[in-house]
Amino acid sequence: MEGGVVKPDKTEFTECWRTSLTRPYIMRLALSAGIGGLLFGYDTGVISGALLYIRDDFKSVDRQTWLQASAIVMAVSVAPWMIIIGRIFVGLGVGMASMTSPLYISEASPARIRGALVSTMAPGTWRWMLGVAVVPAVVQFVLMLSLPESPRWLYRQDKVKEARAILEKIYPADEVEDEMAALQSSIAAEKADEGSMGSSFFSKLKSMWGNDVVRRGLYAGITVQVAQQFVGINTVMYYSPTIVQLAGFASNSTALALSLITSGLNAVGSIVSMAFVDRVGRRRLMIISMFGIIICLLALATMFYEASDHAPPVSSLESLHFGRNATCATFLQASQPSNWNCMKCLKASSDCGFCANGDSKYHPGACLAVTDAVKGMCRGEQRTWYTKGCPSKFGFFAVLVLALYIISYSPGMGTAPWIVNSEIYPLRYRGMGGGIAAVSNWVSNLIVSETFLTLTEAVGSAGTFLLFCWIFCHWTRSHIFPRTRDEGAGV
Image (cartoon, rainbow, N blue to C red; front, side):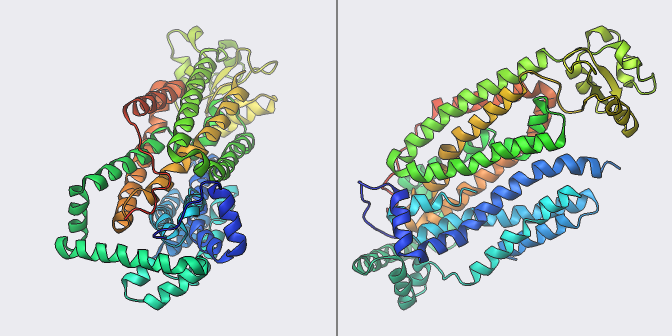
């Protein structure tokens, strides 16, 4: 809320659970709003696994309403365009939740545990994967019906009694009067500002930009949100099974299982963040996270380079073993087929696939046409069929580094930018500042996710992760982020 005394001898995590046990109403508020983060994480991650099966099958209004509609549309899809419409609905719902959930939690929780609570928000076969999203969406819709408005909003609407009633459920009796006084002071200052600058969106934006302190805060808030995306995290979340296949795991089920392990670590990292975000501090947690991310990106780039460089060669004898009609046409027309390896076969054309050697998948294999019949012939000889990545001895190491990347990202850069944006702005600018920062996050997300597959085709997986590493290293060197610990109650 507006004020609150931060106890230096307790972490927010400890204080959060202690307060929740004595006042479970607070946790209900946070979890009800935080389901938006769960939906964000699920809807972001589920499409990565569903794409593996959608590719085969399709070869030839408030935020809760959007989220439910999207899940239903995607579950009953009979064509790719229906899934796209469902994903648009998901984007509308999750986009609104990503801005309003942290704002609501920050306005309806004590300052001493705000950081820990905000971190709860940081987030055929494919039909079930996409359709199950309707369950948490409906749960959130039902819970939100019973949620009150934030005390700050109620007080601003002159509903003082209602605001006091909510505060009495959140704070101990001896702190309620202090919170009411802080509300009165903050809103009086806000209304005084509006009297001189107006209450329209553009008037507030102009006032924000004219205030040096707020402008620096907005710059910092946008910067960390953009940096969060340009480490490439959502390319990992969107395409993690595909990345696992690029590392050399051909089976859809294996790729999905391994990607689920790495994705699950994201949730573990968020819990770690709750435990350390106040003890370590936002800035230090992000710096530790940055170094871990940089090391992991360099390691991933190295792993994928080695996997590509040591890809099994293509044998003309192995390819013609299946017949000329089954052999990839691009390979047959190549001037120097002896220089081909698995990776060159897959990059030559989307119509080319690699059938591994029957004795050892690391021995020379066949470059064949991608058809159901040819794939059946390959698998009929107990061989492994590859269309995304190649057999690699570095596959498990790449998945391990991918897991370490998630572990490095989640506790710091995964949650801290959202926590920072919920507390870095003066209260009267918090909604607008957090909203602008959230927009910058989603725009950056769009840029990175839309260019990932193009980059992997143009410069390879190794080059793509190296590019992410270079961008993040440059950002880390160029920006020093100010401390925000214990500064969340500023007016």
